[in-house]
Image (cartoon, rainbow, N blue to C red; front, side):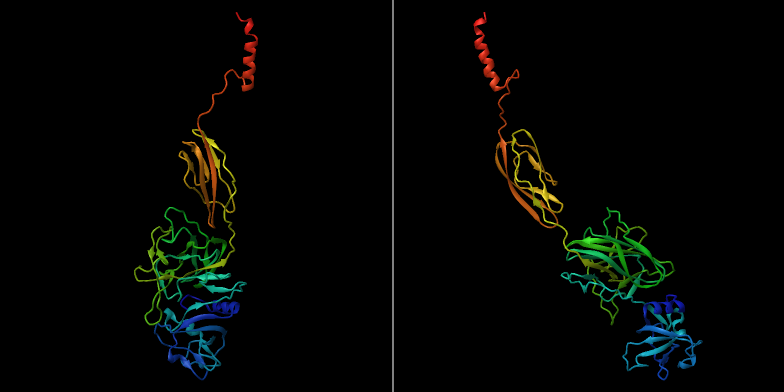
Length: 413
């Protein structure tokens, strides 16, 4: 195969997983209808058919092929032409076919599909589904590989959900990858003012289509835009690390929209991206899928818990903190306030009222779920305060003091 699989690798993958999907050049000169075998000597670099490897026979005779290979041994192949074709739908492909050099009439694009047992139903892009949702732009999958090492896809949540898995292709063996997730907005994959953190990283031994479980799911809410970002690093001299969906005349029509897929170069997290709709050689959609699971809403609408406001006086410093139950309040707002008073985003009412009067104030608390409104009465008293008595006498003591002066007035000279 063109990705340097050894025979022992192929056998192990069949044994462990049951089958390997692959493509090859189904040249007419290669078929032997008597032995239901295939070995082509065509030098044409072409892949026009797909089938699956399901077994092998190291001693299958070279003499059973129409064209004589240099060795015994063959792969048992399940074709896609029905049970009336070949040997009940199967045929034998020479080991020599899989070892053809430079992809000439050989086998290529091998994939092993591992079935995952899921407790939830899977539905594509159905926002009301309560199980898994596969979010994607590349409906046709990988049809071309390109040189940028960074790719990103922007999606939008249509429910409260957790991003639990990311899928992508690796285009060669022994590829290192990094996964980033950013949910700051829809305009571009990364925020130049924010340091991105690697969510997952690793190395994948074989080229193909991969599903990576996130060790820390990303919480998303209805209406959130988020980008899944992949960085690829190849260990070989192959120059095209990123898989994309591209149109192929007569075969694939890739519908690429602006603002869906982005690509970039460089070692560090990019601040400049190229939109896949307008990139040179494109348009391309990034072959990235975001798999999300439904999450019941764990947030609660706010409810203002304050019942009344303390009164104040003109020119007197005032300070009052509003509180609310439920999930955290993002912002507090007030209707018209008495001149001199102001409400902060954190719900702190401060200042010095300029004019006396009875005021009605509407206070609103906002969070991600809903809003809470309540109207309060605020009494501002006049700033004229009766002077305090001198000498430390209370009003009652003032009367006593006056009485004593009268009582002892006869003794004054």
